Structure formats: C-alpha cells, structure tokens
Length: 140
Image (cartoon, rainbow, N blue to C red; front, side, top):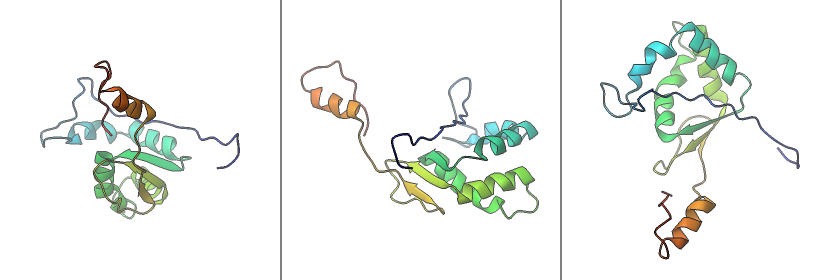
C-alpha cells in the first residue's frame, strides 16, 4: 500500500473468558476450555466470514505457536469440517505477523516476526523514570 489515502481495515477476533483466566486442566494457556464453543457451526461460520477477505493475521507468540502446531495439517485432512479446511488454507496462505519478545524465527509459510520496537510512551517513560515515580515501567 502506498499513498496518503492507503488504509487497511482491522477486524479483531478476540477470545476471552469471563473470569480472565485462560488456564485449562493442562496448565498455562491450555485452551481446551474453549474447544466446545469454538467447534460449533456458528463459530466455524463466523471464522470463515471474518477471515475470508483478510490479507494479514496478527498473532502473539502463544497463539502463533498453538496455531502453527495444529492448523497447517487441517487443510489436507479429508475428515475435517470443510470450514476448518477453508480456515486452515487461509492461515497457510495469509501473511502472518508474529509479535514476540522471545521467538527468533517464525517457521510457517508467510510468517515473519514483527520488528522489535519500543513505543514512544515506553521510551518516554524510561527516560523519566529516574526523575519521577509516576511512570509505570512498560516492558520492551
């Protein structure tokens, strides 16, 4: 995209629990609690509709690792729901930007790590930290 009027539409699909916890019986970030809800016909229809025209997926490290470990093979799984195969094909083909402070590579077709930067707020905060205690530390 180039030019002053170039823009993109951002569509968010956010999964959260009412109590703010995402730990399941398997420990930290065990998402098994959401499977019964994510595997409904309505959920599958929603994901296909939301992602159908999207050109880029923005993922954090944990979602990227979970997705990369599951979704690539679904595209060719004849026993999978057709909507899951469609979502998998989209994920395999789409540009994936991964936000992580710990990964050194994003090993999946069309995936790349976002360039690590500190926000202006974070940088301003760090430079004022010695002079005031009113600035909360922001992780880089």
